[in-house]
Every structure is written in structure tokens, then in C-alpha cells.
Image (cartoon, rainbow, N blue to C red; front, side, top):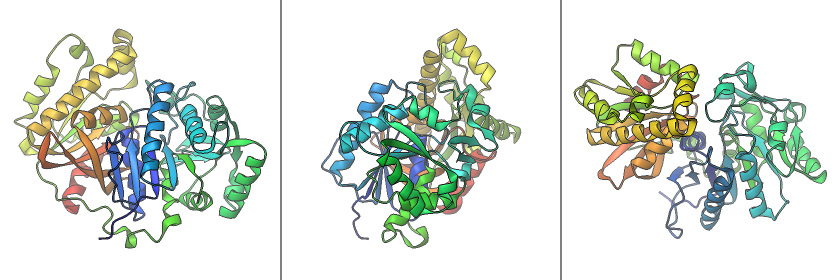
Length: 435
């Protein structure tokens, strides 16, 4: 197989978002490699069309997110990529202080000089019911501000107007590419980009309501040094390198055969993940609830969870979860504080994941962006090969870790808001069928 030179370099602000992005690129036939953090060896070339650098920067202080993103940019430039893609969540998770705006400004400054350059904002992902119309982000039929994201424990989103949200975070002027222009196709979209730049606009929110829109936007983005978006835009970009795509995507998502036991670790408290946990339990499958207050009290919750799982694992997948409804989460946060509650749960679930692998789990589903980041770091994962899609935005991956040099682990990192209600059981069935 011919060695590839990467053309697209991606910076993702969390680990599930990184695999979500890589998944859409692989579906179009591009070969993608995902790194966990910035590799230490800048000289080692990567044989792929796309490199996705997964950071854990969504909810850290904005200055730290900027610093980490710039380090990732410099490393990707050393790999010779032609275009940079800053990926954030399709629900535009952020705070009034950032981090999407400050990172976008820093990347544009680095690529074009202070205050210069132009890019887009487009978190649309229609396959997962995320659309942008008249500059407003919708989740299904609801405005973002009316969806469950309004009560998100870390990044509550109370404004669906992306122009307004982005303008509060960036030093550049923000404007809109409305749907009336998007519906006319790539030529009209590119003309709007040029007109906005002439007016001194640095960031353009772009409407999109279906995959056909993403394809036309993708054409208009050919050659743009920086793209910022959710993973949906990745559906339209690969056509700009059509000579690289594997025929019909065959081979781009092939993974080694899966072996070992199966388990799910869930830390997300989204409405979607709550439904998935409930579905798993209602099927009569074994599930163990992690209590943050018990962790804070000094109980050996990790040991209890692993002791519970050990005799059950040979019978099929088990679920260990800290997922809870928003009222229960708020009650815990009121007692422990938001930051401490999150840190305790992430630490416990990541240690449980390590213990499960020690018990023979080689197929692991992890639900929640922050949880996935903690688990991947605890497992010592450095690179991931992207495999078949389970549900839109969520693929299986194959990883190797220095901690288990003779094992190939299969991980599925699921954003809290993604997946059908039966995702946890469906994921293992798909991996078995495609291995």
C-alpha cells in the first residue's frame, strides 16, 4: 500500500469529538490516524491522509486551551498538512469566556498574522439533528437554548444565536452566510466569503440544514487555511481530495479482529446517555452505579466495582456508570462543588477502566467526553486507528498501549449526546460482525 502524506490536520477539543470527526472522514474513504495529545516525536511522519490531534481542552481555562492548540498547530505544520480543522462539539459547548473564540483567534493569528485571516463557524451535523438556520443552532426541532444543553453541568448553553455567542468570544467581526446563499451552492457561498472579507469580517457563521448543504460548503472551503466546525463539515471536505479516497471507502475503516471481554464505562449525564443506561438495565443486563458521595467519603468504590464485575464479565458486557439525571447531578455538585465532583468521578471511572482491561476486557465503550479523555489517558493510549461507524459520530477504534504491549484494545468513545437508545448493546454486535 502506498505511503500517504497527510493533507488535513485536525485539532479537536475533546477525545470523543476527535473520533467523531475522524469517523466522518474515514466514511468518505480517507485514511485517518488519531493521536492522543501532541506526539513528542515531531520528526516521525504519519502514514495517513488525515491526522486528528485529540486534546482535552474544551472546559479548561481559555489561556491553556489556546496554548495547547497552538502546540498542536505547530506539530501538524511539521507534518506538512495543507489545511487545519479546529473541531468543537455540534452543540457548540462553551462558556461566555471561551474556549471556541479564543482558540479560533489564536489559530488565525498564527496562520495569517495578528487580526488577519478569515474562517467559518458551522457546528451543523444533520445526521445527529444539529442544524443551523438564520445563524441559530437547533437540536432536533428545538433551539439549542431550549434543549437539554441548557442544563449542562459544565457548559450550559442558554443562547442559540451563534453570531451573538461567537461575537462575545472573538476579537474579530462576526457575520452570517444565510441559508438563502448556501442553497445556491458552492460558487455563491465562496462569493459570500469574499464579500464578507472585504467588509472586514473575520468569522462567518454558516447555515446548514442537510448533508447536501455540507457538500456545497465543503467545496467552497477548498484551500481555506483554517476551518472551524463540528464534525459535520468533514462530510463535505474529502471531495477536495477525491484522488485520495479509497474506492467507496473500502479498507479505510478496517480494524484488527476483536478479542477479549466486553464492558461499558459511562460518565456522561446527558439525556441521551441516561436513556442508554436505562435501556441496558431494562434488558436485565448487569450494571453497577458509581456514587460520587461514596468516593468523597473514602469508600473503595473502584475496588467494589471491579470485584462486582469480575464474575459477570464472562457472561457478556457489563456497565459501570456514574450517569444520573440533572437534579441528582446538581445535588452532588452542591455538596462537593462542580470541579471536585467531576474530578472524583473521572478519576474513579478511569481507574475502573484500567482494572477492567487487567481483567481481560479488550472491547470497551466509554460514554462522555470528559470521561473518555480521562480513560484514554489512564490507559496510556497514544494513537488510534479509526474503524467502522456504530452510529453517526461514533466509530470503533483500535489502539495499543505501552501498558499492554501484546494486546490490541478496541475502544468506542461516545459523546454524551450521540447514539440510539440501544447503543451499548448494538456496539458490540457490530464489532463482532465486522471483525
